[in-house]
Length: 205
Image 1 (cartoon, rainbow, N blue to C red):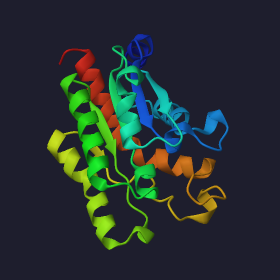
Image 2: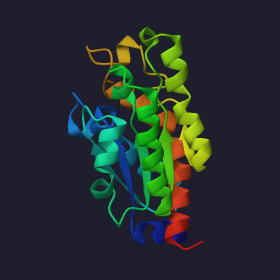
Image 3: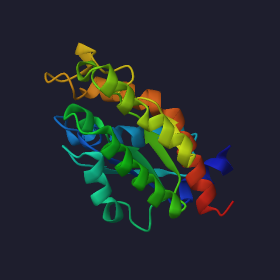
Image 4: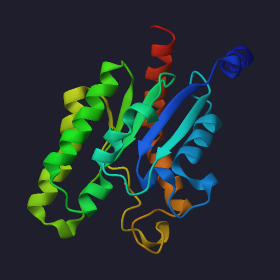
């Protein structure tokens, strides 16, 4: 056990970029409560990852999927080992054409896969007030793209938090610190799988 712990501690950290919008950036929260920071601490605390992990906050409030695509190349540098893609919430809130959102996310995943980077795609669901037709067109984007590109998939980033008054800020859309804790706890197994893929890639396995 001690030998494993020592080798894990001395190994170079894996660098995972969280590419997202305000839900990643930590809108309305102290920096220490932002999703990437809390996720990195959770990974360190459970000790199940093969290497230490650094989670980079590449969240920009207000970003759509198209905005994320526009900054992809500089947000995800050559030293990155894996990527969490969390985009689409603003597309749905603004009622953007789901075809535009799909095209942008498709291109993001295409570029990341071309670089051989492991990816975890975090899904988003359209608000009910957008109507059933829009909901159906939007919601299917994420599982279909995850299957197309064979990437890890977490169906709904706000699972367990959306519409829960005690877990969200006054705007009803952005999670409070407690809400971020719920998100981290629920998505953690998929992130651990991503880290495993990133470690195998780094080690050339």
